[in-house]
Image 1 (spheres, rainbow, N blue to C red):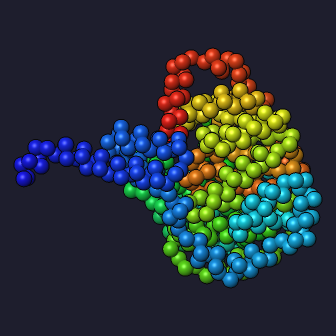
Image 2 (spheres, rainbow, N blue to C red):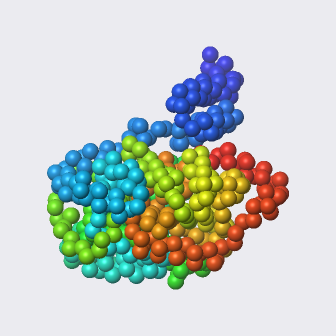
Image 3 (tube, rainbow, N blue to C red):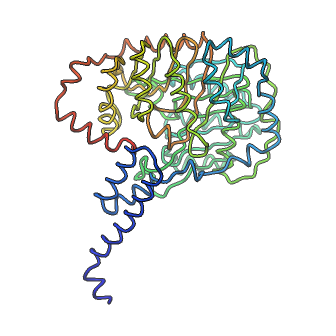
Length: 483
């Protein structure tokens, strides 16, 4: 028997592989998910023995249904309930918002179903263009911290900006400020020296979903893509800028174009709650959340903001749904900037219909991507948009990493979510949705400025691009639901 197994081991392994693969195919089909994604999984499982099962294991689990972690411990705490109850608007206030938002109230109500995304009316909002401006403000706010500092980042890498931040964090910790840091184990590269110093400074730090070989896992798992900073419960930051020298043009050898937000006001509470849900998961601490984390804020601003967090821990894909609603209800224009454009069918349809309905739809993407597969997958979608009248521009000054959208001079969003399947369905993301004419016009002005450093794609020339390019695009598009 042993001799038979040894002689036919390869055949036995192949049979076992296809027994598991067929079971997985049946499971995928019964889920009734997106047909494109279903076909992609079937192709991988059938034509790539062993590798296909690994890819399905890493990608194919429906974590939104199974819930990677529970948010109940945080959301059920009396302090959090009191904050959410205080922020909840009554019918009279909602009517005022309806009049103010000029028809965009559908968006508010969509997110309002998510109890952790209340619409906040009392906020000051600063639009921060590029990492240099973000870190100038962030370092100043960190140095002024009196009670606590909460940081949650996808990327933290060794370098000059990290060293500056670490010096400030250790200084504040020595003064008695409570510093907590959550970082993604795949996106971040913290050296043993940095971890040792964090420990010596008594800064609590935990990785998000640690993996054994982060260098080899790439994106083949569910990651925390958020970039959140909360200082004393009074000031918060959110947007596209991570903690690494490449995000700071002062230290970078090539130009990096990004956008971030500084918030003061009621919206800080939502980002604070989002941080605590992550902290509860990464630290496994049953932290008692006190009112000191949610101080009363005297806010002079009147910018309406909703914070939407989305990921495998939420019941619905809130960020994707909000962006979809904003596009489909647009009347004048939709201007989008994204570094990674690998959209699902719903988003493509929304952009096409908006453009064909007379809405001015413009899209800025990088000319050069940091991923060969993503670049060609992105290109495979552009012809369908161009045919529908969408104007597509490729940023040429450097790499554009901003994740923004502005609609009709009244609505804008800045956050961590890209316009791709991974951000909409797999990663943990957070976006600020802003309902304000002044801020929307500021973002529109920046978009127009970025157009000056971008080249427009000519629809006719694009349609006549080499067949070899189209073949690469079609191949990479097959993988688009998985990348």
